Length: 139
Image 1 (cartoon, rainbow, N blue to C red):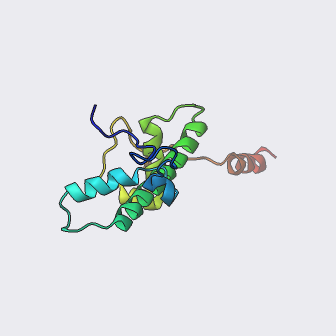
Image 2: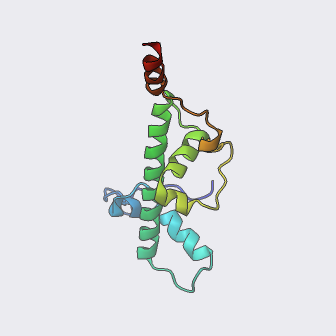
């Protein structure tokens, strides 16, 4: 075993309350302890505070929720029950702020945005103008 299991109680004190994780205390789903460990081991700075790990975990959780919500809406529009990379691509590229954040990112199997230049579309002819031009000549 790796020794990273959950410790429910303090060693040597039976009947004590189970330990609450940093994520539970912060009210987050993302692992604050793991983010904190990775920040410390990443040698980004000499000292890393716990508040920075909580803040970073909250930002990552917010971005994840935002992308998944938009991708779920895109999947529902395409009548699918599963989010595919194509739906993530559509969600990110249709949102202005996320598009700016992911401007240099290529999403694998995401495809391209549907875009047809207006010059390539067939020219619209108005039937009302054509029929009105024919009616005076038929009298």
